[in-house]
Amino acid sequence: MLKFYGTINDSPKIEISKAICYFRLGSIAEKKQDWVKATQEYRKAYHAFLVAKNESGAKGAAYQLGIVAEMLKKWADAIDWYQTSLKMCHNERDEKGEARTLQQLGVVAEKQENWGQAKIWYLKSLKIFEKLSNETGIAKSLHQLGRVAEKQEKWEDADDYNRGAIE
Image (cartoon, rainbow, N blue to C red):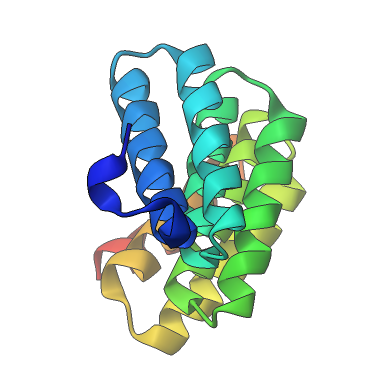
């Protein structure tokens, strides 16, 4: 297998090739909603990216493992994987990736009805998106903050956040 990517002396190239294939298999399993298979393949991708010293790939696999753990309602696993991805984003100075991951941490907190923590994650995400002048990210963060305020029956805050999201 994967012989067409190089010789045995090209092991980093082969590991990256394996990682990419595992990642695609995870993506396919995710689309089929086969969460167990998706987890297995994304884990293989994550480890292969680490062996190849490709933190960017590992960061993406960790993020997807968070998504899949969320689908399985394995909140602690989702948080761990998102935290792993967040650290890698920080190491790579990937601010957009950080903001995206912070939003997902907010989603997990929201699904657990931990409104205070969800708000903290969404505000951190909003701050980064504002710094980047990313209008889509700003709007999404404001919408998420509005949803949290609504769940807490903080109607004026919900109104303000949602109006901010559409302006």
